[in-house]
Image (cartoon, rainbow, N blue to C red; front, side, top):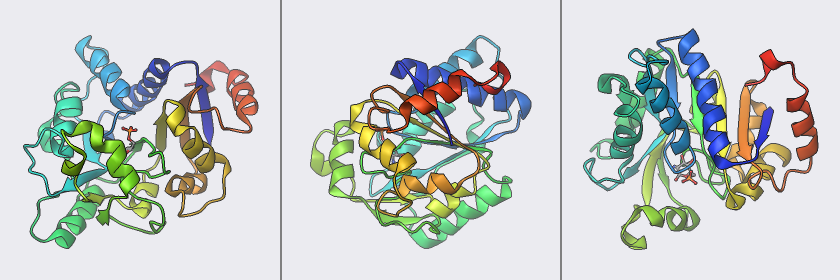
Length: 260
Ligand code: GLP
């Protein structure tokens, strides 16, 4: 794992965006895995700025969202279809036809999940998957005890996740109880993973994911089995990392061309 510790949350977004810009410049039809939540917002804002100033052309980029709530309409402002449209597709000027979100309203959920997996395969797989991390170590909505082999499917949200996401809704009861999420097996097939985390509430999860045992109790620990993973975190999210000094030293002493 490449672990980059930066002084501030703002710098996390800028550096992660730089890495994605480099990919899109190298591969204009890149397939990006898109995460929702607060963590990647600074990335999208930075990428949007590159698009506006003409330094990044995203017209051929495709995107696949990690997950979607079940039980709220697509028009709900907090459905992930709406969030991805508002925070990613519009500001990054992506072609809406190339952006997909799991269909949380499908009558046949199993079929919708299979179709989603098929769409990712048909696009040639995900080149770079953006990830946040839940305070309980979830990625996408793969809650603790999710199988490392899991594919896109329906999941029940934990009380912790519902409480954490209540800030996006008028009342805690409005937070859906279920979701569709790419599985850990699906996510692992992305050619590259980029996880960003900011703030002290993520410190324990980041430490468990990076330095703890690989266990389904911390779904993000599956990252330890992937060959191309970059974690970009701020000092607060890095606070529980035992080898933080080693990561800082390693990154600082890389030749410039190897740094992000
Ligand atoms: C959310 C999403 C995840 C996200 C995580 C952390 O509920 N399903 O994709 O990474 O939980 O969210 P946040 O970035 O808002 O802390």
